[in-house]
Length: 307
Image 1 (cartoon, rainbow, N blue to C red):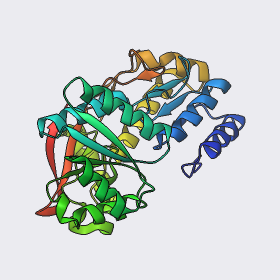
Image 2: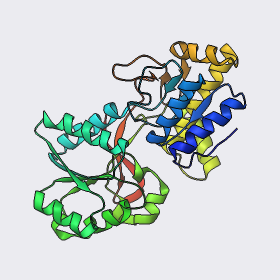
Image 3: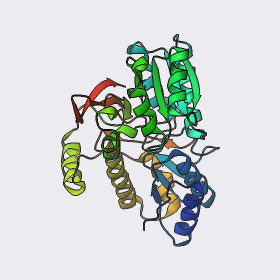
């Protein structure tokens, strides 16, 4: 049974309520961190196993829970790797264009804490500024990198166009750690302007035999190269299938099995453990890369850094 949360936390909580009432053995999925947090909280309250595929917000639940497991890396882990990339690239005066959201605020805090002890600074700019005013602020503060902690396509696309078109900012690095440039819609909207914008991707440098086979199948089904989110979805199904085969459909038995999961995933073997600062059962860790679209060939991704 499939329910579309439409990136709405209230709809996510209602979907978990409905599915639990219908007697499902488990709930899986969710891409948006804030929405996943609502789904995880409701699943925990109802005693329904929830396997989170793709959301990264560290605090999926306020208190430790036995009911929730997650495949995606925690934001504090992945975004520190992104911070290391910025430092290695010589970018220490970082500006972030950000919108009000617990996810963006958490990401900003991770970057600020990580960079501060290493000689970096993080300046927050309100994404409601006009793109022109934002460019002026970047020049005034001497920023060497601008990170887009904003939604796509609005306001991300107009901001990128404005920065790319401003000669004063020819040397600034534009980044999007949350991964917006991964998707074909980004390339379609921005063309060449959307290339050379580093983002986080949860894939290894080379896929093993299983990953290669699954990647080929996904490409044939999707009609395009699969994103890392597609691999997260496949791994989610593989984990859930293994758990159901071994423990049946009893909800409590499924939740109790998280620490005993041992599944060959598309990106490496998957196991869950208790990780400091994380309230759910966590796969620690999926492979992480910082990549961008090659300016010379925007459909090709370049690996810039790995963690």
